[in-house]
Amino acid sequence: MTLCIFTGPTLPADEGARHIDAVFLPPAAQGDVYRAALDKPVAIGLIDGYFDRVPSVSHKEILWAMAQGIHVLGAASMGALRAAELSLFGMEGVGAIYEGYARGELDADDEVAVAHAPAEGGYRPLSEALVNLRATLGAAERAGVIPAATRERLEALARGLFYPDRCYPILLRRAEEEGVQRAQTAALREFVREGRIDQKRADAMALLEALRGRFAGGVEPKQVRYHFEPTDAWELIRERADRRAVRPNTRETEVNR
Image (tube, rainbow, N blue to C red; front, side, top):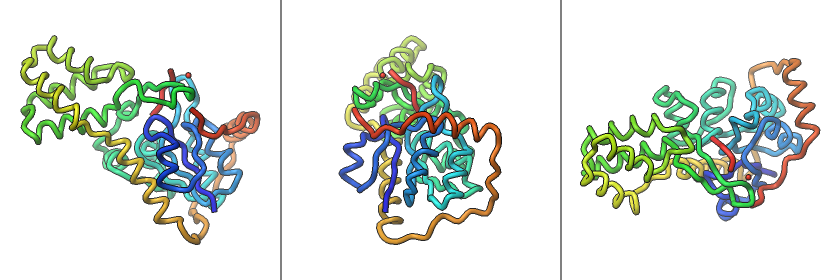
């Protein structure tokens, strides 16, 4: 029984491998879920996926994979987005970020977007996801580090930053330029040292737990209620994917969500 998991900046593959026996693959681009499904895994876990300069994982290939009897679960990043968009068709979502998208509390793709190092750099994140900034600012407010008005102001400033620029140093410098008291930004800098919340990582770990709990033993193939309809666009995705291989997760700046 095989599990396939697409991950990268959210959770390093070597760390994930310490928690679950699975085939770890790099962040998914368009066609990668289709190619992974050709090997007939019992389930595919989608965490990270490319966008912007690289075509993203298509909804159609996820629908195709599930129609082949493969369970597909998503969380944390691209996986949370696709799970919320395809939940009515049977894709399963895990974690707080998925729930936020499913309830409509999150509605922007760039909530989970980050810039990250190339494979040779272990996909190390080079910016902070807005969902993580939001969670950390909320924790700082609850801890009495900043008042609610400052938290709201910082969230608005973070939303206004281009996603590769989202990080605490830039955010706090911008906050001081906008008139936030330096005593508050200094207190927040100190809080972040130990109190930073990585919601994306937490949700990725929850996905590993769900996969391990659900698919440790025998499981029935995925059953779907839709008829998969091949289209010209789908055939083009397949043709392009068949020309290249899904590479095992190894250790380029890329953008990802």
